[in-house]
Image (cartoon, rainbow, N blue to C red; front, side, top):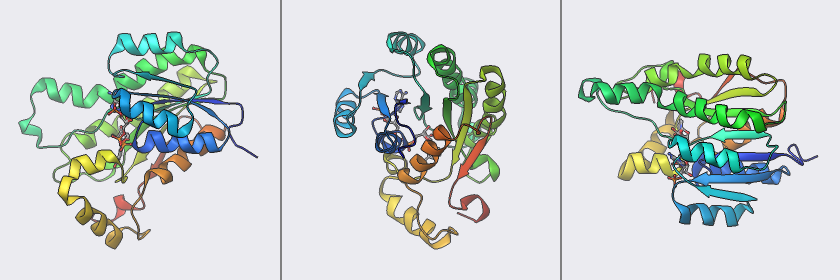
Length: 241
Ligand SMILES: NC(=O)c1ccc[n+]([C@@H]2O[C@H](COP(=O)([O-])OP(=O)(O)OC[C@H]3O[C@@H](n4cnc5c(N)ncnc54)[C@H](OP(=O)(O)O)[C@@H]3O)[C@@H](O)[C@H]2O)c1
């Protein structure tokens, strides 16, 4: 039976990578999907590909646009996945105070703004689902502020889950995922990184967006899950990669 039949999934950042792959998977499980992203052309193409019910092009970090998007959305909705917003790497001492403040807080602030605007339209039992990373499990050279920024997210999601119940709140903590974001961060070192991961990860292959999408759809469908963080990194945090 389709796991999300009759449900509506909103993807804040649904035109590429993990968000788009989750839209595909949610459609295959019977859901209607609503996609957002900044680039209207990419969004249009993604929406046509998955047969999205609705799209909106805006920057999710713009509080006014985000509020308007949710205000205009017909209720009810079931699940919201937030994949907008990327990580920040680089030496800590190269960052200004303002950059540190922003890097530490931007995922939580975006998550909170989405929660604030979405919760009144969500069916009980639906989930808000945020993206974090496994970077904080093992601090490494070059990760910079990224580990500290992701470390705040599990207790943040748990606290929000208590406040928003019976709407559920969960967090996915990914390691390297082979998406357009990873390609843009690594440039011509992408293939080398893939090979390194194939050689060192316990799963012997690179984690792809479809792996994360399968987890995301499971968290949406399984109404026992709330306040929790789900690692998906192929064992990366336990090896030297
Ligand atoms: N890939 C990894 O290895 C990895 C690992 C751990 C965690 N994550 C996290 O998972 C999330 C998704 O990553 P991904 O690799 O799937 O990224 P991606 O391939 O770059 O896709 C991101 C999607 O979100 C949209 N988006 C980005 N910023 C946005 C904004 N400010 N407002 C609205 N839409 C926005 C993008 O479209 P537009 O650019 O057109 O807006 C695109 O549709 C990110 O938060 C990332 O930090 C990724």
